[in-house]
Amino acid sequence: MKIVLKVQMNCQKCITKAFGIVCKSDGVNSVAIEGEDKVVMVGEGVDAVPLVSRLRKKVRPTYIITLGEVK
Image 1 (cartoon, helix red, strand yellow):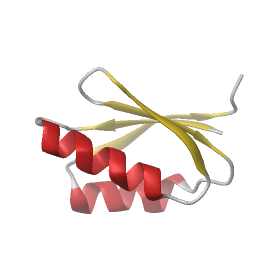
Image 2: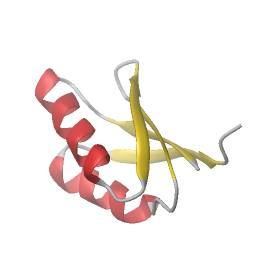
Image 3: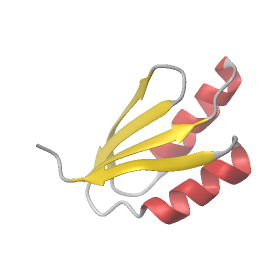
Image 4: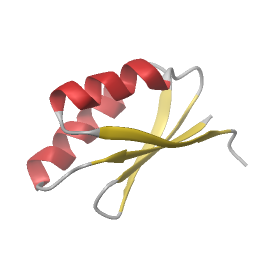
């Protein structure tokens, strides 16, 4: 499954924190940061709702852009 999230990241500390939270999530195989506000992750059995909730609490406002299968 491929999940693209929009996370408001204004500084390097926010980027590092968001990257760490996503990497520690169960089932995540790879994580990439695109531009200033997109986090793309690929994994098996990742539940996006608790992940978004965690990012909202720890980093900044977070929104799900897309959920889909890896091509």
